[in-house]
Image (tube, rainbow, N blue to C red; front, side):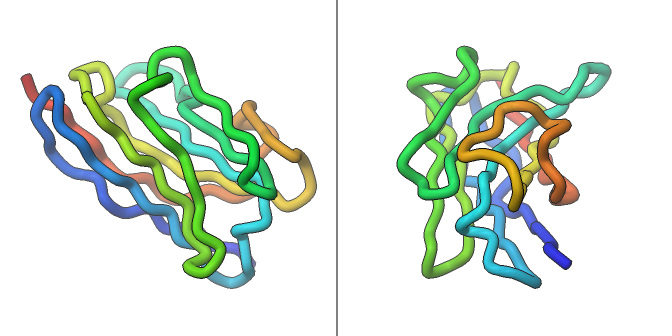
Length: 125
């Protein structure tokens, strides 16, 4: 059974940075297609970024392009989301996701089999 655990959320000021981590346990997930999604209060969950199985391809939502960077470490079985130049509209619960079967890169949340419980990110102005 694959389990994902996010960490690194917190409170940051506008223009600040945070790095989220998503560590997999139960199986080696680093070769899975993986992604980050977020859900703000009263809104639908939305795509943030995705990384391919090999790690060679990435994709970003337009709202975070140039500010966020997704990556993964094979040695640590961990995926990261580096968030810079943060804005109040980045405030949300951030979820990581992984899938073993589909890919190589997945943008739709319905195509992911495994999910973490989320970590809160709050950007204050």
